[in-house]
Image 1 (cartoon, rainbow, N blue to C red):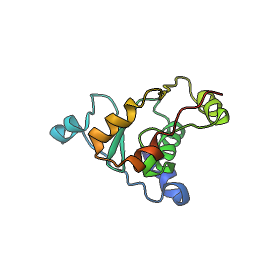
Image 2 (tube, rainbow, N blue to C red):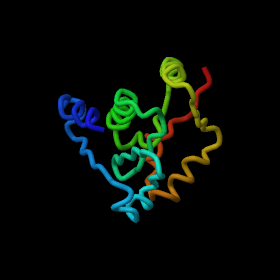
Image 3 (spheres, rainbow, N blue to C red):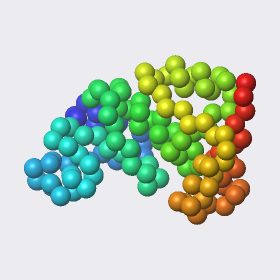
Length: 134
């Protein structure tokens, strides 16, 4: 974790707003349980009030790549980013070992988002553009 703190401190341009916190499970057990930390090393980060639990390999480069991607998203793209071109889809598929792709066909995503987040129709149209077949 010292290496992680050193890289974050040295790269202020990318990680200037990132705040690191070490939580010792044996001392702060209740807080660790609430955050979803198991007995192993857990990396959890929050962005725009949404929590993300890193579950990849515990290497500084992998952790910071994941965190930087989430930090680079605008609030209207969280937690999912809309892909509108085949190039964006190909880039996404080739950037990871496993990918989950949510396809919008019937408009049910708009209704669920409206129920859960009290968004307006204009907000939803920005989040969920109509799906196009290429």
